Image (tube, rainbow, N blue to C red; front, side, top):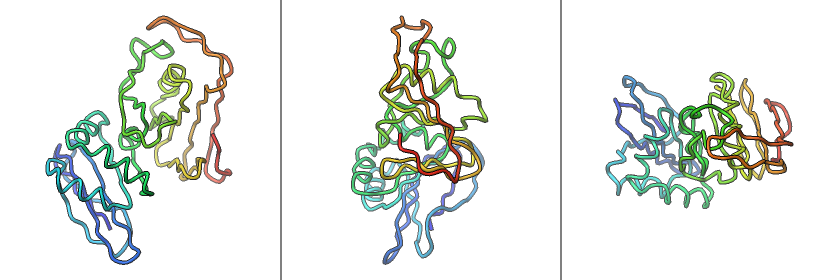
Length: 231
């Protein structure tokens, strides 16, 4: 299994090297909380922990990983650590080679190319109110938002989607997973996944910080047990 120990503000990579068909995994996390322990992965795999500051070891771990997992915290700080170690291209390469990439909370937000962080300024539904940060980009055609219903982020994600109408917004509730596979999205867990799609909408021009306007946005609310959704 991949065991992860979070120590202070330290970013860590956690590596599992298994035998036979057992998968190896890498987990990148950062936190301000006190040390704690958890585990992800499969049986019969041993875990080795390397720091992102050890660039050579981090690249070696990602290069052979079948699973790459990103923990929660702050997505800007997580991306800063990954960029500092120059790991983003290596993660994309593993994804193209068939590795499973997953994340929780901030770790989910970093998966899209356009990454969200913070609140809309000055307010939601204003052009440019949600600054577009650069994420890892393994989900190039989507904008991922997390804690979606719990933190009332419909306005935040809608603002970003209207600014980037070629991308599909995906809002994921807590304790819930949106599984992307074979061009479809499947929901797992007790919550919901909200899809906001402006690809066929008529988006009206607006000045920076001006009021956004669009006709024909589509919203889908998905839950576990439904057939996988094709965006």
